[in-house]
Length: 231
Length: 231
Image (tube, rainbow over all chains, first blue to last red; front, side, top):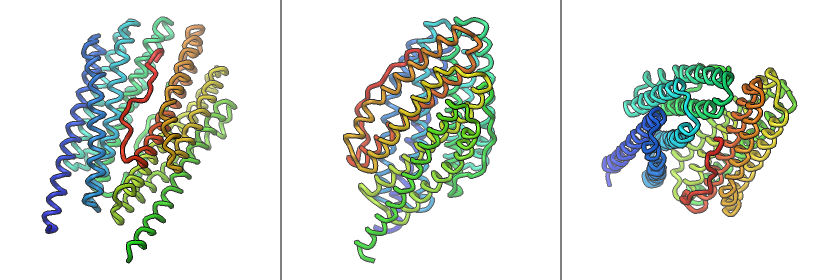
């Protein structure tokens, strides 16, 4: 086999992996948005679909990890080729976690319906979910396009999500203080909010993989952080 | 260079990585235990030490990731050698997250002192922390010793931690219902409890890396799960 041939085999296999990673990203985004819709619309059937769909996301992650390990073992990539495979592995891990949060949100939507909802805060949580999904999308786009400046922007605006979460927390605290019967629902919503903040963190980690891929190094500088306030 | 020579160079480099992973495990365990002690003993100085020590854990993780990538690029390991490197990378990620939870716990201990503590629940959280640290230790031991049966045991008993968390949640709920002034402290403690449950999840993930290393496959069977109750 010529070097060129080996090269093109590797590139083709990497392309396939990238396509699978993108498909996984689409599945996770859909799961998160559906879970948010199910919560806002008390749609138990949609919530159930999100819950049962998580297995498929997990299976795709396992498949991507296996294929990446196989590609490394067979083709022994170096330099930016190796970074490409490693970063896909890391992104798949991040996406799998985000899928778990979608499933968890879908589980809680049933409990929240049973308790009776805090509609205003439910809307805040849905809004927050849409915002983090959009960040996840941008992070994945920055990776696929190897767009450093987009990746840096995502990293530098992560604290906006932390602020959304802090507002939500304060809002929920007032409901709990107002009426103890709100406590259980409010705690569930606060959990969901916290999980969405974590999805935001994963979007940042994905953006960091863009920088790792293009520069060969993980960004070292601290990104802006919002201090724990209410939380 | 002979094959034997290449082999021994790889083995030596892997040994170094393994030693660094173990050192990282020690640092994370110490951080978690110190954070729990700082919380229980209102020891702000100790909490501060945990907070500032997290940078060192992050730096060690970055170093391990770089060294693993370097080892893969230079030595192109295959089969169980490749799995050894990949699993060390994954364990380092898990440990870094556990370090973050220790730091977060140390941040909250100051806030909890300011609010006034719920001493009984604080003790429950400290106890839970000690339990998950012991699981983390066992998971790392199972990995180093390539002890499959130990790894399987950790995986199968993860729901015990979930149950501890559920008990804590119910305990905190009663305090909140009893007196709204307990709400803020209780929510902080519940967060800490949830984070410790996540440390338990990471211990399980580390145990799964033992199985990946020894069998070449990630365990597929579902492990026992406790359903979200209060949470």
